[in-house]
Image: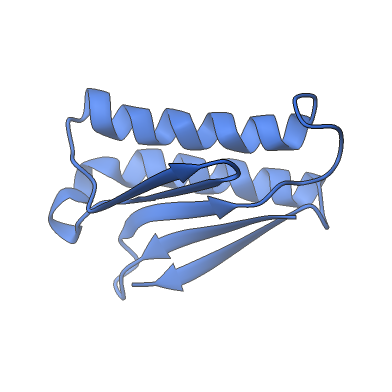
Length: 107
């Protein structure tokens, strides 16, 4: 199962995300859910880094894992992007119940 956490502060300001695991829907390299989640996570992180030029306070990427979080001071320009990422994951969670779990974590 893929476990995704969306990080937000007490006021609801989105600060980033964590994605861990594999969906096990298909063999590695042909799993459409893993590909969809990975692609969305990389697009979100790369846009923040390369287009918005915001340096994250936390960034970790490994096989089957990504952690990406920005500071509260840098979060405002990222809101639409993080909200779109969250919406995308929630749609995938609905479509692939039992293979993706999306949770919210207050930080």
